Length: 349
Image (tube, rainbow, N blue to C red):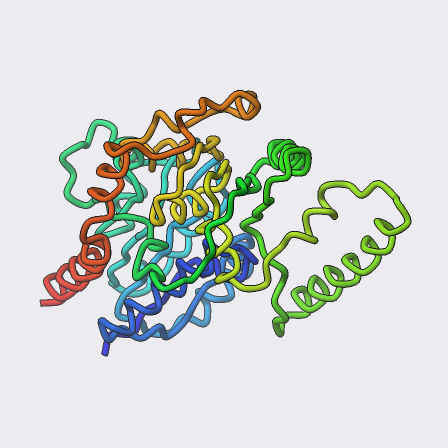
């Protein structure tokens, strides 16, 4: 049994995409008989003093596995802290480290050599990200591409009744998200946020966040009843789903969807729901559309009132491109873990 340190557990972020990704990582690790001995969640990666405490109490691990989701973009502090954590542990003990499910863009802190030197293998979510990282080192064998882990063993038996309504997701940018919300309300479309209601957790901060969330729901519910105008940041909470099945069913049931979230796009692509997508931070949405071959479905926020009606349905060619992308997707994701194990045992021997 291999014992590992899993870095960047994003399941605490009240975000369905992150939750599913971590579930799938753990599912595959169990299948491959790899045991998670310790985890460093995304919150710890924000604070260097917490990492120093963790490094000081370092235990023995066979390898380090870093989930790169939501970490290495837009001048992220988490990138620097992740590299600091990995390099500090590697100085204490000669140990292999692997980066998976990552995207690399818009990061002035990114130094190709430091990233490549810290990891034995790097798996990025798109060909665009691979080119961004490698730049002039295009033949470097450390860097590979594998589909986002949300695609792994995607639930196929989710029953949902096809509706005649359109769906509109939220967006990572608050202002864009508000525009999408307002547009959905004016056009009788379903608003589908990727964030979900907080789960009760043992951390004092998380307990306070849980209580605060539901108290605000009660307060703003009665303010709405009294015809007070509620700001978007509070009103959107009434649309949060409690279960990921509800979120997945909501997307699957729509005849067409306007998307502003990467993982919502993944769900739409898997279920072959006609869509248009608005770029998120960096290039992660256009990068995925590039890999699938559907860049024609990328729009900007100013175009939502004038979407080409031809995009209301997927063409035969588009369906073929999606199917080609999805072919053997589970095997391709598992192959990433097999390659990591082969690399680990190869270096160990």
